[in-house]
Length: 130
Image (cartoon, rainbow, N blue to C red; front, side, top):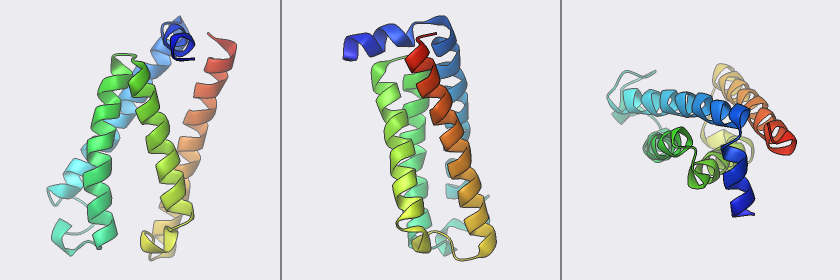
């Protein structure tokens, strides 16, 4: 399977898409970094603990994922899938620990919708091997 995935990452459309995903993940990492630096919704030290843990964890994961996707590596794809799956888990099962207002829930649902679209495009390219 890993050999097949490596071959698929080298197909032209998938290679382009992985670079696009790398840019998106790098943007996510920058958002988490800006939160850590205090440029977020509120000062980082005043954020709920779950948000601070998320900023650290996803800041690192998004950075590693962006590098791996840019290099079109299999481990980058696995990091991408891990990031998406973990966010779906924490933002659906444990949403009460992350969203305290209606606006925050709407933001999270928008994020999950965007990630679902990115994932569907990925699997479409994976299946069609384009």
